[in-house]
Length: 128
Image (spheres, one colour):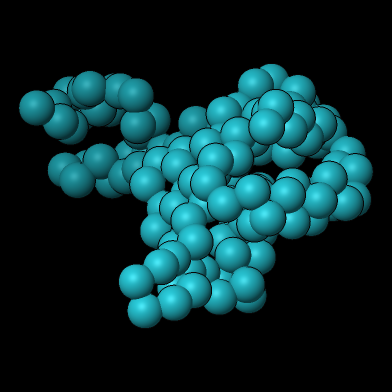
């Protein structure tokens, strides 16, 4: 099966969706980094297994499915029916000028900037 490409989704968006889908289908789910495994008992000595590999790219997430053909096809259909996701715009970083805070000198009480090492009034050293 060729990989599915979901635009504007990341693996962090998809992991909980895939986990929930697998659990709802009766699979026991284990997740390790970008790999999700689901195992479902189908008989006394038989089971069905699905392995999902997720790989992030800047504009999409690649999903590779291995295992039971029926489960992989059903999961693939579910993923393809996910609503399109809008790309999150990067927030503008605004740097605001900050006021320099003053503290009283412990010796004479004069207000001194936190950046000063010595009190301008009494000459006491404020920090070591």
